[in-house]
Length: 281
Length: 319
Image 1 (cartoon, rainbow over the protein chains, first blue to last red):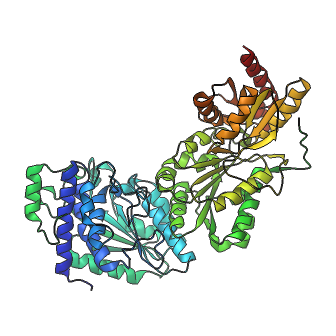
Image 2: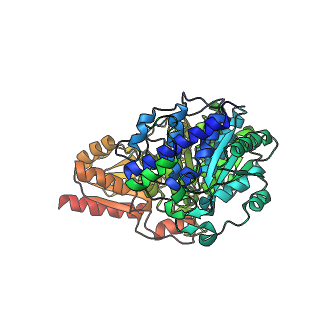
Image 3: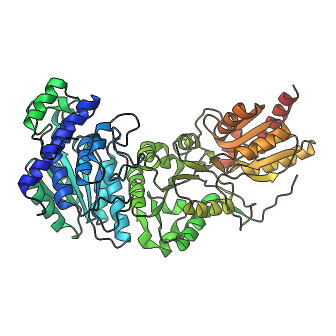
Protein backbone atom coordinates (compact mmCIF):
# COMPACT_ATOMS: atom_id res chain seq x y z
CA UNK A 1 0.00 0.00 0.00
CA UNK A 2 1.28 3.43 -0.95
CA UNK A 3 -1.23 5.06 1.40
CA UNK A 4 -3.23 4.05 4.43
CA UNK A 5 -6.96 3.65 4.01
CA UNK A 6 -7.44 6.76 6.16
CA UNK A 7 -5.16 8.76 3.85
CA UNK A 8 -7.12 7.56 0.82
CA UNK A 9 -10.40 8.43 2.49
CA UNK A 10 -9.06 11.92 3.16
CA UNK A 11 -8.15 12.33 -0.51
CA UNK A 12 -11.64 11.18 -1.49
CA UNK A 13 -13.16 13.71 0.88
CA UNK A 14 -11.24 16.53 -0.81
CA UNK A 15 -12.25 15.27 -4.24
CA UNK A 16 -15.89 15.28 -3.12
CA UNK A 17 -15.51 18.88 -1.91
CA UNK A 18 -14.06 19.81 -5.28
CA UNK A 19 -16.93 18.10 -7.12
CA UNK A 20 -19.68 20.00 -5.37
CA UNK A 21 -17.76 23.29 -5.58
CA UNK A 22 -17.03 22.82 -9.30
CA UNK A 23 -20.63 22.00 -10.13
CA UNK A 24 -21.89 24.83 -7.93
CA UNK A 25 -19.38 27.20 -9.55
CA UNK A 26 -20.84 26.84 -13.02
CA UNK A 27 -24.35 25.82 -11.91
CA UNK A 28 -24.27 22.80 -14.17
CA UNK A 29 -22.71 19.35 -14.42
CA UNK A 30 -23.22 15.95 -12.86
CA UNK A 31 -22.53 15.68 -9.13
CA UNK A 32 -24.41 12.44 -8.33
CA UNK A 33 -22.31 9.74 -9.96
CA UNK A 34 -19.18 11.88 -9.59
CA UNK A 35 -19.59 11.66 -5.81
CA UNK A 36 -20.48 7.99 -6.04
CA UNK A 37 -17.22 7.22 -7.86
CA UNK A 38 -14.88 9.39 -5.74
CA UNK A 39 -13.63 6.36 -3.80
CA UNK A 40 -13.00 4.38 -6.99
CA UNK A 41 -11.01 7.21 -8.59
CA UNK A 42 -8.98 7.72 -5.43
CA UNK A 43 -8.17 4.03 -5.12
CA UNK A 44 -7.33 3.78 -8.82
CA UNK A 45 -5.06 6.81 -9.17
CA UNK A 46 -3.44 6.84 -5.73
CA UNK A 47 -3.06 3.11 -5.13
CA UNK A 48 -3.63 0.83 -8.09
CA UNK A 49 -2.68 2.51 -11.35
CA UNK A 50 0.92 2.27 -12.50
CA UNK A 51 1.12 5.68 -14.16
CA UNK A 52 3.21 8.80 -14.67
CA UNK A 53 1.82 12.29 -14.27
CA UNK A 54 4.31 13.42 -16.92
CA UNK A 55 1.64 12.70 -19.49
CA UNK A 56 2.17 11.15 -22.91
CA UNK A 57 -0.68 10.08 -25.17
CA UNK A 58 0.79 6.62 -25.71
CA UNK A 59 1.62 5.93 -22.06
CA UNK A 60 4.09 3.20 -23.00
CA UNK A 61 4.76 0.93 -20.03
CA UNK A 62 1.95 2.57 -18.03
CA UNK A 63 -1.50 1.40 -17.06
CA UNK A 64 -4.14 3.42 -18.92
CA UNK A 65 -7.59 4.49 -17.77
CA UNK A 66 -10.61 5.25 -19.95
CA UNK A 67 -13.81 6.89 -18.73
CA UNK A 68 -16.79 5.91 -20.84
CA UNK A 69 -19.47 7.75 -18.86
CA UNK A 70 -17.84 11.10 -19.50
CA UNK A 71 -20.45 13.16 -17.67
CA UNK A 72 -18.77 12.34 -14.37
CA UNK A 73 -15.88 14.52 -15.48
CA UNK A 74 -15.73 16.50 -12.17
CA UNK A 75 -14.45 13.48 -10.23
CA UNK A 76 -11.87 12.72 -12.89
CA UNK A 77 -10.63 16.31 -13.18
CA UNK A 78 -10.25 16.67 -9.42
CA UNK A 79 -8.47 13.32 -9.18
CA UNK A 80 -6.07 14.18 -12.01
CA UNK A 81 -5.29 17.55 -10.40
CA UNK A 82 -4.56 16.08 -6.98
CA UNK A 83 -2.54 13.26 -8.57
CA UNK A 84 -0.34 15.91 -10.18
CA UNK A 85 -1.40 15.99 -13.84
CA UNK A 86 -2.18 19.73 -13.67
CA UNK A 87 -2.56 22.41 -11.03
CA UNK A 88 -5.70 22.25 -8.94
CA UNK A 89 -6.24 25.99 -9.47
CA UNK A 90 -7.49 25.07 -12.96
CA UNK A 91 -10.52 23.29 -11.46
CA UNK A 92 -12.23 26.68 -11.11
CA UNK A 93 -12.49 26.88 -14.91
CA UNK A 94 -14.70 23.77 -15.15
CA UNK A 95 -17.34 24.18 -17.90
CA UNK A 96 -16.37 27.80 -18.48
CA UNK A 97 -15.47 29.41 -21.80
CA UNK A 98 -11.92 28.66 -22.94
CA UNK A 99 -11.33 25.94 -20.34
CA UNK A 100 -9.44 22.69 -20.85
CA UNK A 101 -11.97 21.23 -18.40
CA UNK A 102 -14.86 20.84 -20.83
CA UNK A 103 -18.26 19.65 -19.66
CA UNK A 104 -17.30 16.22 -20.93
CA UNK A 105 -13.67 15.05 -21.16
CA UNK A 106 -11.84 15.66 -24.42
CA UNK A 107 -8.39 15.44 -25.97
CA UNK A 108 -9.31 18.49 -28.04
CA UNK A 109 -8.04 20.96 -25.43
CA UNK A 110 -5.01 18.78 -24.57
CA UNK A 111 -5.74 18.30 -20.89
CA UNK A 112 -3.10 15.93 -19.48
CA UNK A 113 -4.56 12.57 -18.47
CA UNK A 114 -7.28 12.41 -21.13
CA UNK A 115 -6.75 10.07 -24.08
CA UNK A 116 -10.16 10.08 -25.80
CA UNK A 117 -13.31 12.18 -25.78
CA UNK A 118 -16.32 10.70 -24.02
CA UNK A 119 -19.80 11.92 -23.26
CA UNK A 120 -21.87 10.36 -25.99
CA UNK A 121 -22.38 7.11 -24.14
CA UNK A 122 -21.41 3.54 -24.85
CA UNK A 123 -18.10 4.07 -26.68
CA UNK A 124 -15.45 3.74 -23.97
CA UNK A 125 -15.25 -0.04 -23.71
CA UNK A 126 -14.45 -0.38 -27.41
CA UNK A 127 -11.73 2.26 -27.12
CA UNK A 128 -10.25 0.52 -24.08
CA UNK A 129 -10.18 -2.76 -26.01
CA UNK A 130 -8.37 -1.04 -28.88
CA UNK A 131 -5.79 0.39 -26.49
CA UNK A 132 -5.32 -3.08 -25.01
CA UNK A 133 -4.81 -4.64 -28.46
CA UNK A 134 -2.19 -2.01 -29.30
CA UNK A 135 -0.35 -2.67 -26.03
CA UNK A 136 -0.35 -6.38 -26.82
CA UNK A 137 1.13 -5.72 -30.28
CA UNK A 138 3.76 -3.53 -28.62
CA UNK A 139 4.66 -6.27 -26.13
CA UNK A 140 3.54 -3.99 -23.28
CA UNK A 141 2.12 -5.99 -20.35
CA UNK A 142 0.48 -2.99 -18.65
CA UNK A 143 -3.18 -2.94 -17.71
CA UNK A 144 -6.09 -1.11 -19.25
CA UNK A 145 -8.79 0.13 -16.88
CA UNK A 146 -12.19 1.42 -17.93
CA UNK A 147 -15.18 2.78 -16.07
CA UNK A 148 -18.69 2.45 -17.48
CA UNK A 149 -21.92 3.79 -16.11
CA UNK A 150 -24.64 1.24 -15.47
CA UNK A 151 -27.27 3.18 -17.40
CA UNK A 152 -25.03 3.42 -20.44
CA UNK A 153 -25.04 -0.38 -20.68
CA UNK A 154 -28.35 0.22 -22.44
CA UNK A 155 -26.25 1.34 -25.43
CA UNK A 156 -25.77 -1.58 -27.82
CA UNK A 157 -22.12 -0.88 -28.63
CA UNK A 158 -21.20 -2.08 -25.13
CA UNK A 159 -22.49 -5.52 -25.97
CA UNK A 160 -20.56 -5.62 -29.25
CA UNK A 161 -17.48 -4.89 -27.15
CA UNK A 162 -18.53 -7.33 -24.43
CA UNK A 163 -18.74 -10.08 -27.04
CA UNK A 164 -15.43 -9.15 -28.66
CA UNK A 165 -13.13 -8.97 -25.64
CA UNK A 166 -13.45 -12.55 -24.28
CA UNK A 167 -13.46 -14.11 -27.77
CA UNK A 168 -10.21 -12.31 -28.55
CA UNK A 169 -8.71 -12.97 -25.10
CA UNK A 170 -8.27 -9.29 -24.24
CA UNK A 171 -7.10 -10.27 -20.79
CA UNK A 172 -5.24 -7.20 -19.55
CA UNK A 173 -8.50 -5.29 -19.41
CA UNK A 174 -10.31 -4.44 -16.17
CA UNK A 175 -13.66 -2.76 -16.78
CA UNK A 176 -15.62 -1.47 -13.81
CA UNK A 177 -19.33 -0.73 -13.87
CA UNK A 178 -20.60 2.07 -11.65
CA UNK A 179 -23.66 0.15 -10.49
CA UNK A 180 -25.66 2.85 -8.76
CA UNK A 181 -29.00 1.84 -10.22
CA UNK A 182 -29.94 5.38 -11.25
CA UNK A 183 -30.23 7.24 -14.52
CA UNK A 184 -31.70 10.56 -15.66
CA UNK A 185 -35.33 9.49 -15.86
CA UNK A 186 -35.30 7.39 -12.69
CA UNK A 187 -34.10 4.05 -11.31
CA UNK A 188 -32.65 1.80 -14.01
CA UNK A 189 -35.06 -0.87 -12.78
CA UNK A 190 -37.93 1.33 -14.00
CA UNK A 191 -36.35 2.86 -17.12
CA UNK A 192 -34.84 -0.26 -18.69
CA UNK A 193 -33.82 -2.90 -16.20
CA UNK A 194 -30.26 -4.23 -16.31
CA UNK A 195 -31.25 -7.31 -14.32
CA UNK A 196 -28.48 -9.78 -13.58
CA UNK A 197 -25.40 -8.05 -14.96
CA UNK A 198 -23.08 -10.65 -13.45
CA UNK A 199 -24.83 -13.47 -15.29
CA UNK A 200 -24.94 -11.44 -18.50
CA UNK A 201 -21.22 -10.67 -18.53
CA UNK A 202 -20.33 -14.19 -17.43
CA UNK A 203 -22.40 -15.55 -20.30
CA UNK A 204 -20.29 -13.41 -22.64
CA UNK A 205 -17.13 -14.94 -21.13
CA UNK A 206 -15.95 -12.29 -18.66
CA UNK A 207 -14.49 -12.99 -15.22
CA UNK A 208 -16.82 -10.98 -12.99
CA UNK A 209 -15.99 -9.76 -9.50
CA UNK A 210 -18.17 -7.73 -7.14
CA UNK A 211 -16.96 -4.83 -5.04
CA UNK A 212 -18.45 -2.18 -2.78
CA UNK A 213 -17.42 1.00 -4.55
CA UNK A 214 -18.00 3.20 -1.51
CA UNK A 215 -15.84 1.20 0.91
CA UNK A 216 -12.22 2.29 0.40
CA UNK A 217 -10.72 -0.89 1.81
CA UNK A 218 -12.99 -3.01 -0.38
CA UNK A 219 -12.38 -1.09 -3.59
CA UNK A 220 -8.60 -1.04 -3.14
CA UNK A 221 -8.54 -4.76 -2.42
CA UNK A 222 -10.98 -5.44 -5.25
CA UNK A 223 -8.88 -3.60 -7.85
CA UNK A 224 -5.66 -5.25 -6.64
CA UNK A 225 -7.40 -8.62 -6.81
CA UNK A 226 -8.64 -7.80 -10.33
CA UNK A 227 -5.04 -7.22 -11.39
CA UNK A 228 -4.10 -10.71 -10.20
CA UNK A 229 -6.79 -12.16 -12.46
CA UNK A 230 -5.39 -10.64 -15.66
CA UNK A 231 -3.33 -12.52 -18.20
CA UNK A 232 -5.46 -15.64 -17.86
CA UNK A 233 -7.42 -15.43 -21.10
CA UNK A 234 -10.43 -13.48 -19.85
CA UNK A 235 -11.23 -9.78 -19.48
CA UNK A 236 -12.22 -8.75 -15.96
CA UNK A 237 -15.47 -7.01 -15.07
CA UNK A 238 -15.69 -5.30 -11.71
CA UNK A 239 -19.35 -4.94 -10.83
CA UNK A 240 -19.05 -2.09 -8.37
CA UNK A 241 -22.04 -1.12 -6.31
CA UNK A 242 -22.08 2.57 -5.43
CA UNK A 243 -24.53 5.14 -4.20
CA UNK A 244 -25.27 8.12 -6.35
CA UNK A 245 -24.33 11.21 -4.34
CA UNK A 246 -22.28 9.28 -1.77
CA UNK A 247 -20.90 11.58 0.91
CA UNK A 248 -23.62 14.23 0.72
CA UNK A 249 -26.65 13.10 2.67
CA UNK A 250 -29.36 14.89 0.75
CA UNK A 251 -28.04 13.61 -2.60
CA UNK A 252 -27.60 9.96 -1.65
CA UNK A 253 -29.43 7.43 -3.75
CA UNK A 254 -31.52 9.84 -5.81
CA UNK A 255 -31.48 10.16 -9.59
CA UNK A 256 -32.56 13.78 -9.07
CA UNK A 257 -28.88 14.64 -8.45
CA UNK A 258 -27.68 13.04 -11.67
CA UNK A 259 -27.31 16.38 -13.39
CA UNK A 260 -28.40 19.11 -10.98
CA UNK A 261 -26.16 21.71 -9.35
CA UNK A 262 -26.56 22.62 -5.66
CA UNK A 263 -27.57 26.16 -4.69
CA UNK A 264 -25.60 28.25 -2.14
CA UNK A 265 -27.39 26.79 0.86
CA UNK A 266 -27.06 23.22 -0.42
CA UNK A 267 -23.38 23.80 -1.14
CA UNK A 268 -22.77 24.93 2.44
CA UNK A 269 -24.59 21.86 3.73
CA UNK A 270 -22.52 19.55 1.51
CA UNK A 271 -19.19 21.14 2.43
CA UNK A 272 -20.05 20.85 6.14
CA UNK A 273 -20.18 17.08 5.63
CA UNK A 274 -16.89 16.85 3.69
CA UNK A 275 -13.68 17.73 5.57
CA UNK A 276 -11.15 19.86 3.68
CA UNK A 277 -8.08 17.63 3.79
CA UNK A 278 -5.76 18.77 1.00
CA UNK A 279 -6.79 22.41 0.66
CA UNK A 280 -9.56 23.73 -1.59
CA UNK A 281 -8.63 24.98 -5.06
CA UNK B 1 -8.50 16.53 -75.98
CA UNK B 2 -5.65 14.53 -74.56
CA UNK B 3 -6.00 10.86 -75.43
CA UNK B 4 -6.55 8.43 -72.57
CA UNK B 5 -6.47 4.70 -73.17
CA UNK B 6 -6.56 1.64 -70.99
CA UNK B 7 -5.50 -1.95 -71.34
CA UNK B 8 -7.45 -3.38 -68.45
CA UNK B 9 -10.37 -2.78 -66.14
CA UNK B 10 -10.07 -3.24 -62.39
CA UNK B 11 -12.07 -2.36 -59.30
CA UNK B 12 -10.90 0.48 -57.07
CA UNK B 13 -11.37 -1.74 -54.00
CA UNK B 14 -8.60 -3.97 -55.33
CA UNK B 15 -6.45 -0.85 -55.50
CA UNK B 16 -7.20 -0.36 -51.83
CA UNK B 17 -6.24 -3.97 -51.05
CA UNK B 18 -2.95 -3.61 -52.92
CA UNK B 19 -2.21 -0.25 -51.29
CA UNK B 20 -2.96 -1.59 -47.82
CA UNK B 21 -0.59 -4.50 -48.42
CA UNK B 22 2.17 -2.10 -49.53
CA UNK B 23 1.54 0.25 -46.60
CA UNK B 24 1.72 -2.74 -44.27
CA UNK B 25 5.07 -3.79 -45.70
CA UNK B 26 6.43 -0.27 -45.31
CA UNK B 27 5.25 0.45 -41.77
CA UNK B 28 4.73 -2.15 -39.07
CA UNK B 29 2.35 0.17 -37.22
CA UNK B 30 -0.22 -0.16 -40.00
CA UNK B 31 -3.02 -2.44 -38.77
CA UNK B 32 -6.30 -3.42 -40.37
CA UNK B 33 -9.78 -4.13 -39.01
CA UNK B 34 -12.76 -5.53 -40.83
CA UNK B 35 -16.43 -6.11 -40.03
CA UNK B 36 -17.01 -9.43 -41.80
CA UNK B 37 -16.22 -8.23 -45.33
CA UNK B 38 -12.62 -9.27 -45.85
CA UNK B 39 -13.19 -10.56 -49.38
CA UNK B 40 -15.20 -7.55 -50.50
CA UNK B 41 -12.53 -5.18 -49.18
CA UNK B 42 -9.70 -7.18 -50.78
CA UNK B 43 -7.77 -7.39 -47.51
CA UNK B 44 -6.54 -10.95 -48.10
CA UNK B 45 -2.93 -10.12 -49.00
CA UNK B 46 -2.50 -7.98 -45.90
CA UNK B 47 -4.03 -10.66 -43.66
CA UNK B 48 -1.86 -13.39 -45.19
CA UNK B 49 1.39 -11.50 -44.58
CA UNK B 50 0.46 -9.75 -41.32
CA UNK B 51 -2.07 -11.95 -39.52
CA UNK B 52 -1.18 -10.57 -36.09
CA UNK B 53 -1.89 -7.03 -37.32
CA UNK B 54 -5.40 -7.83 -38.52
CA UNK B 55 -8.49 -7.74 -36.31
CA UNK B 56 -11.73 -9.35 -37.38
CA UNK B 57 -14.44 -7.59 -35.38
CA UNK B 58 -17.47 -9.34 -36.78
CA UNK B 59 -20.64 -7.52 -37.77
CA UNK B 60 -20.12 -4.78 -35.21
CA UNK B 61 -19.09 -1.58 -36.94
CA UNK B 62 -19.50 0.70 -33.92
CA UNK B 63 -17.13 -1.48 -31.94
CA UNK B 64 -14.72 -1.51 -34.87
CA UNK B 65 -14.49 2.29 -34.96
CA UNK B 66 -13.99 2.46 -31.19
CA UNK B 67 -11.30 -0.23 -31.24
CA UNK B 68 -9.53 1.54 -34.10
CA UNK B 69 -9.58 4.81 -32.14
CA UNK B 70 -8.14 3.03 -29.12
CA UNK B 71 -5.38 1.39 -31.15
CA UNK B 72 -4.07 4.78 -32.28
CA UNK B 73 -3.24 5.54 -28.65
CA UNK B 74 -0.61 2.80 -28.81
CA UNK B 75 0.86 4.33 -31.97
CA UNK B 76 -0.98 2.10 -34.44
CA UNK B 77 -2.35 3.33 -37.78
CA UNK B 78 -5.66 1.48 -38.12
CA UNK B 79 -7.40 1.01 -41.47
CA UNK B 80 -11.03 0.01 -40.94
CA UNK B 81 -12.82 -1.73 -43.78
CA UNK B 82 -16.49 -2.21 -44.57
CA UNK B 83 -19.06 -0.93 -47.07
CA UNK B 84 -19.41 2.84 -47.31
CA UNK B 85 -22.87 2.79 -45.79
CA UNK B 86 -21.69 0.91 -42.70
CA UNK B 87 -18.49 2.98 -42.57
CA UNK B 88 -20.32 6.27 -42.18
CA UNK B 89 -24.05 6.55 -41.54
CA UNK B 90 -24.18 3.56 -39.24
CA UNK B 91 -21.32 4.76 -37.06
CA UNK B 92 -21.47 8.52 -37.43
CA UNK B 93 -21.44 9.35 -33.75
CA UNK B 94 -18.61 6.91 -33.05
CA UNK B 95 -16.56 8.58 -35.78
CA UNK B 96 -17.56 12.04 -34.59
CA UNK B 97 -16.61 11.58 -30.94
CA UNK B 98 -13.96 8.84 -30.81
CA UNK B 99 -12.16 9.67 -34.08
CA UNK B 100 -12.75 13.20 -35.37
CA UNK B 101 -13.23 15.17 -32.13
CA UNK B 102 -10.53 13.07 -30.48
CA UNK B 103 -8.26 13.64 -33.53
CA UNK B 104 -7.30 9.99 -33.84
CA UNK B 105 -5.19 8.67 -36.69
CA UNK B 106 -7.86 6.31 -38.06
CA UNK B 107 -8.27 5.61 -41.78
CA UNK B 108 -11.92 4.82 -42.51
CA UNK B 109 -11.85 2.84 -45.74
CA UNK B 110 -15.17 2.40 -47.47
CA UNK B 111 -15.96 0.17 -50.40
CA UNK B 112 -19.13 -0.25 -52.47
CA UNK B 113 -19.89 3.46 -52.33
CA UNK B 114 -22.66 4.87 -54.48
CA UNK B 115 -25.00 3.39 -57.06
CA UNK B 116 -22.38 1.12 -58.65
CA UNK B 117 -22.76 -1.30 -55.75
CA UNK B 118 -25.61 -2.45 -57.96
CA UNK B 119 -28.05 -5.23 -57.28
CA UNK B 120 -28.10 -5.08 -53.47
CA UNK B 121 -30.16 -1.92 -53.79
CA UNK B 122 -30.66 1.27 -51.83
CA UNK B 123 -30.06 -0.12 -48.33
CA UNK B 124 -26.41 -0.54 -49.32
CA UNK B 125 -25.95 2.25 -51.90
CA UNK B 126 -25.00 5.23 -49.80
CA UNK B 127 -25.12 8.53 -51.69
CA UNK B 128 -24.71 10.74 -48.63
CA UNK B 129 -21.35 9.65 -47.24
CA UNK B 130 -19.19 12.43 -48.71
CA UNK B 131 -21.49 15.01 -47.14
CA UNK B 132 -21.55 13.25 -43.77
CA UNK B 133 -17.79 12.96 -43.62
CA UNK B 134 -16.79 16.34 -45.00
CA UNK B 135 -18.85 18.08 -42.33
CA UNK B 136 -16.68 16.62 -39.55
CA UNK B 137 -14.01 19.13 -38.51
CA UNK B 138 -10.52 17.89 -39.39
CA UNK B 139 -11.68 14.94 -41.50
CA UNK B 140 -9.90 14.43 -44.83
CA UNK B 141 -12.19 13.04 -47.56
CA UNK B 142 -10.74 11.21 -50.56
CA UNK B 143 -12.54 9.55 -53.50
CA UNK B 144 -9.97 8.22 -56.01
CA UNK B 145 -10.83 7.49 -59.64
CA UNK B 146 -9.24 4.18 -60.61
CA UNK B 147 -7.22 1.22 -59.36
CA UNK B 148 -3.84 2.93 -59.54
CA UNK B 149 -5.00 6.13 -57.88
CA UNK B 150 -6.74 4.21 -55.11
CA UNK B 151 -3.61 2.20 -54.43
CA UNK B 152 -1.49 5.35 -54.33
CA UNK B 153 -4.04 7.13 -52.10
CA UNK B 154 -4.11 4.22 -49.64
CA UNK B 155 -0.33 4.33 -49.31
CA UNK B 156 -0.35 8.13 -48.97
CA UNK B 157 -2.90 8.24 -46.15
CA UNK B 158 -0.79 5.79 -44.13
CA UNK B 159 1.86 8.50 -44.04
CA UNK B 160 -0.57 11.29 -43.17
CA UNK B 161 -1.26 11.91 -39.46
CA UNK B 162 -4.97 12.39 -38.78
CA UNK B 163 -8.43 11.00 -39.56
CA UNK B 164 -9.18 10.18 -43.19
CA UNK B 165 -12.25 8.92 -45.04
CA UNK B 166 -11.25 6.94 -48.16
CA UNK B 167 -14.12 6.11 -50.52
CA UNK B 168 -13.95 3.57 -53.31
CA UNK B 169 -16.16 1.14 -55.19
CA UNK B 170 -17.15 -2.27 -56.36
CA UNK B 171 -17.25 -2.38 -60.20
CA UNK B 172 -14.37 -2.90 -62.59
CA UNK B 173 -13.60 0.29 -64.49
CA UNK B 174 -10.78 1.42 -66.82
CA UNK B 175 -7.32 1.77 -65.30
CA UNK B 176 -5.98 4.95 -66.89
CA UNK B 177 -3.80 6.74 -64.33
CA UNK B 178 -0.05 6.29 -63.87
CA UNK B 179 0.82 3.15 -61.87
CA UNK B 180 3.79 4.96 -60.31
CA UNK B 181 1.97 8.18 -59.48
CA UNK B 182 2.77 10.13 -56.35
CA UNK B 183 -0.51 10.79 -54.57
CA UNK B 184 -0.67 14.19 -52.96
CA UNK B 185 -3.56 14.71 -50.56
CA UNK B 186 -5.48 17.87 -51.43
CA UNK B 187 -3.85 18.37 -54.83
CA UNK B 188 -6.04 18.32 -57.94
CA UNK B 189 -4.94 16.40 -61.03
CA UNK B 190 -5.23 18.18 -64.37
CA UNK B 191 -6.68 15.53 -66.67
CA UNK B 192 -7.08 17.78 -69.71
CA UNK B 193 -6.44 21.45 -70.31
CA UNK B 194 -9.20 23.31 -72.12
CA UNK B 195 -10.75 26.76 -72.45
CA UNK B 196 -14.54 26.54 -72.76
CA UNK B 197 -15.72 24.82 -69.57
CA UNK B 198 -14.25 23.30 -66.40
CA UNK B 199 -15.43 19.77 -65.66
CA UNK B 200 -14.61 18.77 -62.09
CA UNK B 201 -15.01 15.06 -61.39
CA UNK B 202 -14.33 12.63 -58.58
CA UNK B 203 -14.28 8.82 -58.23
CA UNK B 204 -15.89 6.72 -60.93
CA UNK B 205 -17.09 9.89 -62.68
CA UNK B 206 -13.59 10.84 -63.84
CA UNK B 207 -13.59 8.25 -66.65
CA UNK B 208 -17.10 9.39 -67.58
CA UNK B 209 -15.79 12.95 -67.75
CA UNK B 210 -13.02 11.83 -70.11
CA UNK B 211 -15.61 10.13 -72.34
CA UNK B 212 -17.69 13.31 -72.22
CA UNK B 213 -14.62 15.41 -73.08
CA UNK B 214 -14.08 13.37 -76.24
CA UNK B 215 -17.72 13.82 -77.28
CA UNK B 216 -17.52 17.55 -76.54
CA UNK B 217 -14.38 17.87 -78.67
CA UNK B 218 -16.35 16.48 -81.60
CA UNK B 219 -18.92 19.22 -80.97
CA UNK B 220 -16.15 21.83 -80.97
CA UNK B 221 -16.17 22.37 -77.22
CA UNK B 222 -12.75 22.43 -75.54
CA UNK B 223 -13.27 21.10 -72.01
CA UNK B 224 -10.82 21.42 -69.16
CA UNK B 225 -11.13 18.33 -66.96
CA UNK B 226 -9.91 18.32 -63.39
CA UNK B 227 -9.85 15.31 -61.11
CA UNK B 228 -10.60 16.31 -57.54
CA UNK B 229 -9.74 13.14 -55.64
CA UNK B 230 -9.53 15.02 -52.34
CA UNK B 231 -12.88 16.63 -51.62
CA UNK B 232 -11.59 17.92 -48.31
CA UNK B 233 -9.31 19.81 -48.13
CA UNK B 234 -10.40 21.13 -51.53
CA UNK B 235 -7.75 22.39 -53.96
CA UNK B 236 -9.20 25.92 -54.10
CA UNK B 237 -6.31 27.26 -56.13
CA UNK B 238 -6.60 24.76 -58.97
CA UNK B 239 -10.36 25.24 -59.22
CA UNK B 240 -10.24 29.05 -59.17
CA UNK B 241 -7.41 29.15 -61.70
CA UNK B 242 -9.36 26.96 -64.11
CA UNK B 243 -12.70 28.68 -63.67
CA UNK B 244 -11.13 32.11 -64.19
CA UNK B 245 -10.11 30.85 -67.61
CA UNK B 246 -13.28 28.98 -68.63
CA UNK B 247 -16.03 30.98 -66.90
CA UNK B 248 -18.29 28.01 -66.16
CA UNK B 249 -18.17 24.68 -64.35
CA UNK B 250 -19.81 21.25 -64.24
CA UNK B 251 -19.24 19.05 -61.20
CA UNK B 252 -19.60 15.26 -61.48
CA UNK B 253 -19.95 12.79 -58.63
CA UNK B 254 -21.63 9.49 -57.79
CA UNK B 255 -23.30 11.08 -54.78
CA UNK B 256 -26.29 13.16 -53.83
CA UNK B 257 -25.91 16.72 -55.08
CA UNK B 258 -26.97 17.74 -51.58
CA UNK B 259 -23.74 17.74 -49.61
CA UNK B 260 -21.30 16.45 -52.18
CA UNK B 261 -18.32 17.70 -54.18
CA UNK B 262 -20.53 20.04 -56.20
CA UNK B 263 -21.65 21.91 -53.10
CA UNK B 264 -18.04 22.25 -51.95
CA UNK B 265 -17.15 23.78 -55.33
CA UNK B 266 -20.23 26.04 -55.22
CA UNK B 267 -19.28 27.25 -51.74
CA UNK B 268 -15.84 28.17 -52.99
CA UNK B 269 -17.05 29.90 -56.15
CA UNK B 270 -19.90 31.77 -54.47
CA UNK B 271 -17.47 33.46 -52.12
CA UNK B 272 -14.47 33.86 -54.45
CA UNK B 273 -15.65 33.92 -58.04
CA UNK B 274 -19.42 33.58 -58.71
CA UNK B 275 -19.72 31.33 -61.76
CA UNK B 276 -22.51 29.43 -63.56
CA UNK B 277 -22.41 25.81 -62.36
CA UNK B 278 -24.30 22.62 -63.22
CA UNK B 279 -24.37 19.48 -61.11
CA UNK B 280 -24.09 15.92 -62.44
CA UNK B 281 -25.09 14.00 -59.31
CA UNK B 282 -28.07 12.18 -57.91
CA UNK B 283 -30.91 14.47 -57.01
CA UNK B 284 -32.08 13.90 -53.43
CA UNK B 285 -32.98 10.28 -54.04
CA UNK B 286 -32.24 6.76 -52.91
CA UNK B 287 -31.01 4.21 -55.45
CA UNK B 288 -32.51 0.82 -56.30
CA UNK B 289 -31.53 -2.64 -57.55
CA UNK B 290 -30.03 -2.97 -61.02
CA UNK B 291 -26.70 -3.37 -62.76
CA UNK B 292 -24.17 -0.58 -62.19
CA UNK B 293 -24.48 0.59 -65.81
CA UNK B 294 -28.27 0.61 -65.71
CA UNK B 295 -28.24 2.61 -62.49
CA UNK B 296 -25.68 5.17 -63.66
CA UNK B 297 -27.80 5.70 -66.74
CA UNK B 298 -31.15 5.89 -64.96
CA UNK B 299 -29.90 8.33 -62.33
CA UNK B 300 -28.17 10.61 -64.84
CA UNK B 301 -24.53 9.83 -64.19
CA UNK B 302 -23.33 9.01 -67.71
CA UNK B 303 -21.09 10.82 -70.18
CA UNK B 304 -24.17 11.99 -72.05
CA UNK B 305 -25.43 13.72 -68.90
CA UNK B 306 -22.10 15.53 -68.55
CA UNK B 307 -22.29 16.65 -72.20
CA UNK B 308 -25.81 18.00 -71.66
CA UNK B 309 -24.76 19.79 -68.47
CA UNK B 310 -21.83 21.37 -70.28
CA UNK B 311 -24.03 22.64 -73.11
CA UNK B 312 -26.45 24.08 -70.58
CA UNK B 313 -23.80 25.80 -68.48
CA UNK B 314 -22.06 27.28 -71.53
CA UNK B 315 -25.43 28.72 -72.53
CA UNK B 316 -25.76 30.33 -69.13
CA UNK B 317 -22.28 31.78 -69.44
CA UNK B 318 -23.13 33.48 -72.70
CA UNK B 319 -26.38 34.81 -71.29
